[in-house]
Length: 152
Ligand SMILES: [Fe+2]
Ligand SMILES: [Fe+2]
Image (cartoon, rainbow, N blue to C red; front, side, top):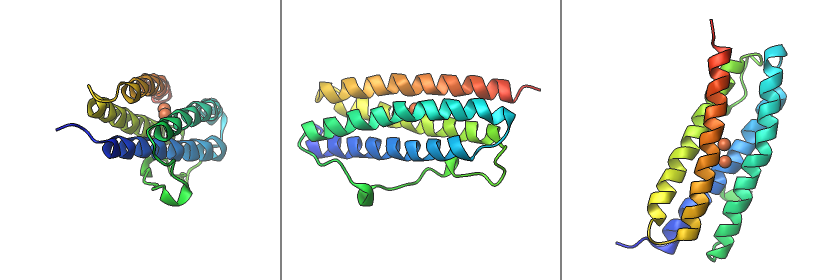
């Protein structure tokens, strides 16, 4: 059965929502963290905010191209438990693990979008592949930080 435009729009809106939640939580963590060890991660998060916002922008433009409506804040659902502010604002490792979880979720969703659009919507598929590559890059970057920060 062929995929419908509505199904593609739903998946694009979910991706848009996920990117904006990631922006919100990377921003909060880039400010909330304390300590010498946190400084580098704060900078990395602050830099990634621009990238994730760029993803949301590209997704929004594709939603518009397909005749959809880019959701406003009341239509967004926030569910990212792994990146909520920590009681211990020096717990950098826990934030890195949260980032990895968020990147993994994004990777899984872009894989779904690639499969959904296969043979049906090449432009959306191309965008999803580009964003998947970016998220895999982020995952690799933060896996490296985790390795260093958990070294005995
Ligand atoms: Fe992203
Ligand atoms: Fe990312």
